[in-house]
Length: 178
Ligand SMILES: [Fe+2]
Image (cartoon, rainbow, N blue to C red; front, side, top):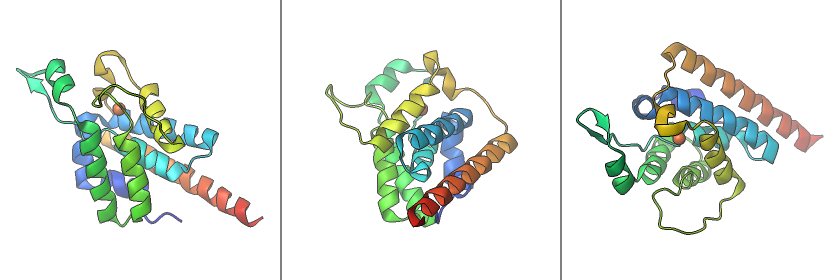
């Protein structure tokens, strides 16, 4: 059983503020990709969709004269660190189990290595899925952050995804018993 739904997370004012900053449409699309990847790779879809939904909430606005400043962003960005922290705080506040909050935060922390020194990262399946889901929705020049979606449609899609996740978890539980 899930104590915290995607709808609980999505409708929280803190999530709304930061999801809108980095793009609602991208966050939702990434969550759907993560759901399908989770099913394919046998990963918990609840954790995968939450991590994917929240993966970019650590973004800062690197604007200069009304334009996104890529140089500043590249040099100073720590959105994965900030996002992991924000997501963890929000999930704990909503009543998420600390073990789940940690798994989700780690998947967000490792969804990109653009802020890390060169080297190979060994990701577990949940962490890999969030990275792939993000990349599946990426557009050149960061355009995925600017795609728009209405608040109504966004909430509708989140509720639908909640149902898919709950149904899947129900199936898995049934599978454990039978
Ligand atoms: Fe992203």
